[in-house]
Image 1 (cartoon, helix red, strand yellow):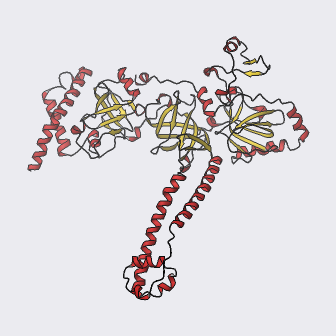
Image 2 (cartoon, helix red, strand yellow):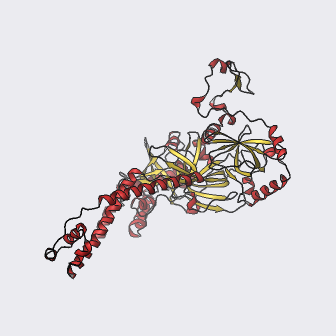
Image 3 (cartoon, one colour):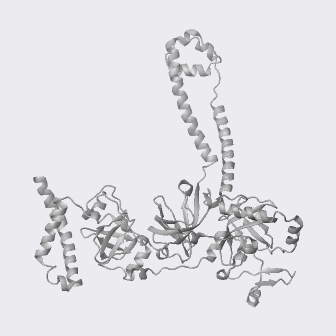
Length: 601
């Protein structure tokens, strides 16, 4: 009885002021917002006292706790959806309440902008998803004590306005809304849920972080080749280290010992040393008594285990110094459309360690939970998975959105950015170590495909299929790390089209292809691979150049035609053939801005 009275007294002292403040604020808000219903009857002494007694009964006698109290006492997670009300705004933080207790919050940049623009103010209700707790306490503490040490971290992409009449506290998980991708902010943290339509699934890539900090992307074939080279080098180093350690462990042989001296030894360690250094261990073992042999066998087993552990430790330390382990992670890029806004521009989703889960299929809709958002080169939006990401397939057929044309050189559509191309390889021209120009032909014409270092070898005369071939705005065909070059594709539709094409050119003699090649003039591929290799062109030539169609000038010394590089904003794909695919995407990605305030209005 005394313990119960002590608990009740503690509750009255610590919680009365907190609950009295929130009850008075709620009742005053009801009278001001709905005077026709609550004027003169909400904020009264009797009503305030009855609500205080109700809270005492619920929290102390029944033992029920609010959302923030369960979170601060480490009995629940802040990542669950919950509705909170803004109870105070400071210079850098805000205070939120679940109607029972209050807690300070840490905001990211987009939420801070909303506070400054008064899109979020005192009395606003918000729905929070995937929040987290920041603080030094590892054990649970009461919410009134936690206010000074714990803070709730809110992310813009996981916070949305709630209706004024929404109940405070935890909400039903099934009510988690799917957000349009266009309203997400790059610096707004993790997104709770989005609905997407998978348009393209690109090949697996591998990202290696080198010892210098430089990052390198490789295709699956390149990674397999690099891993084999690494394994061979590592095996050779292990062999060298084992040989070095075995030579260092060899002991010098000592002179023989008499039988009487052996009988006086009663230590397994001494017998082991004597046996190891004796020139004839077998003859020495015949001099041992049964008890000495038992001691020797027991100590030998212990010494063998100790030496094995020490050997492995030395081997691992020296191996890591001479051949450090590789830091490689796999990733799969996907092109997606927002299911809520299917007519908007596509986005790219990166799934890390994608080979460890069931692959997402093209033409299907998915709900993605806990997706990380980031800036892509400062202008675009980058979506990527995390360890807590969840993928759930939606019902419906979206194959019409993911359909891409299967064409030949003469039928490449101008309005598409990707296609699957079938053709016969007529010529190869290796420009650099990382770029090859392939001349591909069909029964009507020929064209060029720029193949970057994808790890695929192509033979002249073979019939091939390019999957996810990139088509630039100028019509250039580019095969990069997003593309696949196959002579026998697994897809049934592609395989059937490839068979039809082989049958259509089966009766064409070599003279036909020779005549077709003679009508083709190879494009000028002398564009520099790096910006520092651009020819020294006087500024007068740039200012005086008015021929925007050819965008070239004639060098006064030798009369050769030199491509002129336009400004970054006007850079064309054909002028970017020497740059990486990532650089092309950077210049072609439009600058995107989000009006945060309009979302909350």
